Amino acid sequence: NFPTDDPRWDPNVPAEMQRLKRYQDLIVYGLKHGVPKALSWAKLYEVKQGPNETPSDFLNRLREAAIKFTHINPDTTEGALHLAYLFMGQASNDIRRKLQKLEGVQDMNKMLEVAWRAFRDRDS
Image 1: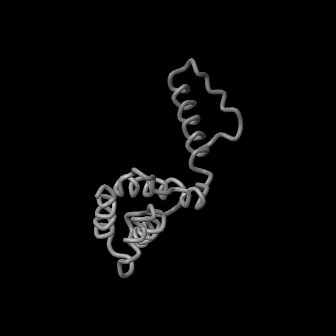
Image 2 (image 1 turned 90 degrees about the horizontal axis):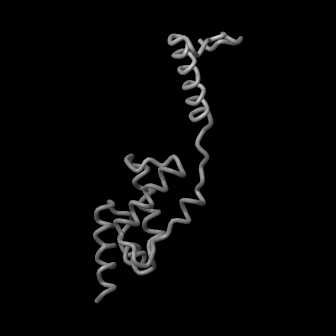
Image 3 (image 1 turned 30 degrees about the vertical axis):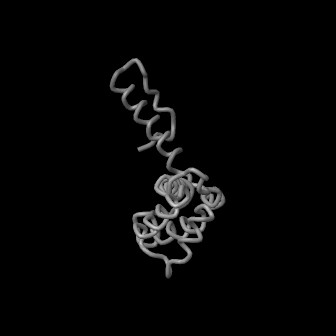
């Protein structure tokens, strides 16, 4: 129960100090969790693969941005599909061209394999 009037808790009394601390913790929890997370699809679409960034590092960065800025859950089927499209669309040009040659969106392991092949072919 939240007191509606001043409960006159004395912080010098250990039992009342515990109540006061618990009350403060609950207020902080409410402030942190009471406001829904702001979605920022623009921030997610700003994530592009760097010229020397490996496909795995790029995918991890993209995954972290999806979790941080949207409600995408990459562990669900729908979230993994969305992440695959983002990976394909925001990869560097050479990798994106190779990924677009695949028939439809494959599973992420297959896409990473193709991306790594294209990444290694840069040095050849």
